[in-house]
Length: 274
Image (tube, rainbow, N blue to C red; front, side):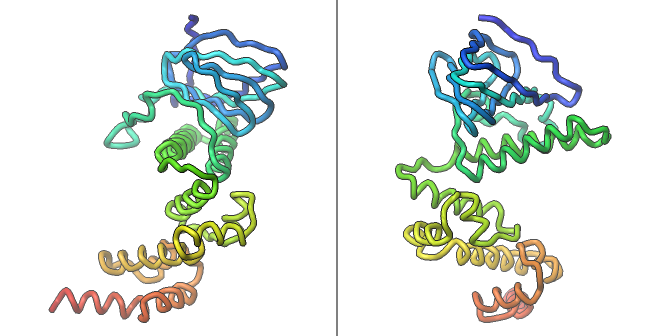
């Protein structure tokens, strides 16, 4: 088995295109760094530690160092290859990137939301690699970390048996981690490629509420925590939890608690003093 060396730039990662004609074979080899292979066009087979996987658009492979792998392209196949040295990212967190996820090679098929996020981050990395901005190295590390976070969360989600349950958990996870964005029912449905009505139906079957009702609950609960535990201005809290206007925030908060944010904060302070 051949060791293929990849020369990385100073910031520790490199994203490049790997094109294969129909019938091309990349013989078994390995690398001494991590790699993510992400298909953006075509079909083929990839062999990972003697396990064969069919790979097509928006599917990929996470390869830990020294993982033997080979590729056979059944059609014209285009992969984006993200090679990186995990040690170059250590200083981004106290716990270092020693999570078990990074020690195991795996094939992955992201859901529509995860694939949308991965494609966007890969586009941003391609842009930054061609930029003369002195901050590009910093930006590239941030985008790489976002990709790794997306993949780790994808792998760690609860194992789901049926497609509707998978979609429901995907919706909930997306709201839990994006509640501060200006989300609408159409946004969520578009990301899953299904109708708003169907999104509402499958979500209500599990949680007895629509995704937007759940979104409002998440925002209000987060606002309540900030009102209790911080002295942040109400307008700042409004902004932090995802509301564009103070009037909309006040209306949603009062509908949920029967009091205004100020009344809620004042009551909390009064209870602390008594």
